[in-house]
Image 1 (cartoon, rainbow, N blue to C red):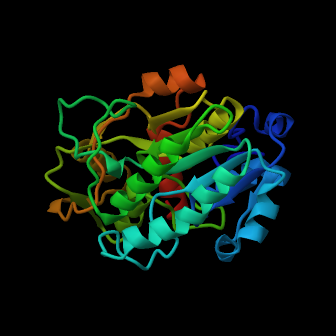
Image 2: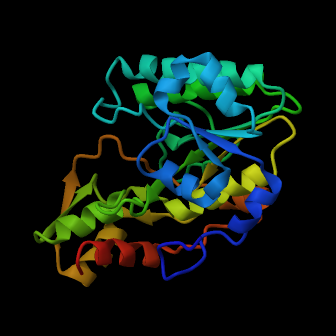
Amino acid sequence: MVGILHGRPTHSYYSQVSQYIMKVAITASDAFVAPYIIDALGDAAVVIPDEVLEDNMTLDVMLTPCNALIHINSRPVDTSVARNDREVKIMMREAARPVLDAVNRHGELHMIIVGTLRVHPPWSPGDDYYGPESSLSPRDTAAEGQLWIEENALERAESGRPVSVIRASNVQGVPLQGPPGNGILHRWASESQIGWINVPGSGDDVKDLVHVEDLVRTVLSVLENPPLTRESFAVGSGKGITMSELANIYNSKTGASVELNQNSDGEVWGIVDAWFLEHRCGFRPLISLEEMIDEALEVSGY
């Protein structure tokens, strides 16, 4: 398995995962992160279609050979529904309830829930980095749904049936099925083609950008080394950059003008405690900001 960046192996022990894991179920698959996880796992992946969640018998049969389950928990599978739609929390809760109940019915199943930092309160310069001890205050309705699922899973965690909650920062990259890319780096690369980039906020806000391949590396590391009972932590590069600094890089590379004070609704600011990530998983993200920017520009035709 080779990553999309420079032919670099995305994870040094992709090939070893199957030695430790019989099968891994994936539920609530999205169009971006889940395909990378499925591709990385290869024959070990058991993709649970959404319609199977309504059939306990079929769901149990599909989970029988599995000793881990990954639930994508950032928003409803139906991406046409806005994050603040009042139905979002209900949709996410009802989609997750059969999964939570199925995990209860199985003897030993490591559940990994992959979501976003939006369950934490907004970040300001000087605040602590996001980590296991960060306070919880969902920013929108989808984040409320995410937190409901996380808390219910963590309450049910026990020895032999552990739960890992992974909250990702601003995930960048190109979907396996091809462009357009995901994240602000790709959005700005596309905007640069028309001569300007729209900068959310004043330019002083800080983002921590992480590549999807590094997020997948984290998921695989957690699969290989489950916690005793429960854990929750953030995933990011551990490095922040202001929007003004990032915009200036795009200006120097593309000549696009910088338009400040654009709409910042839904943006995720703040920096992740990468020291904890290194302590937990044994590595920090490998793909640099420079590589992520180059990838975004290349995909957009620069």
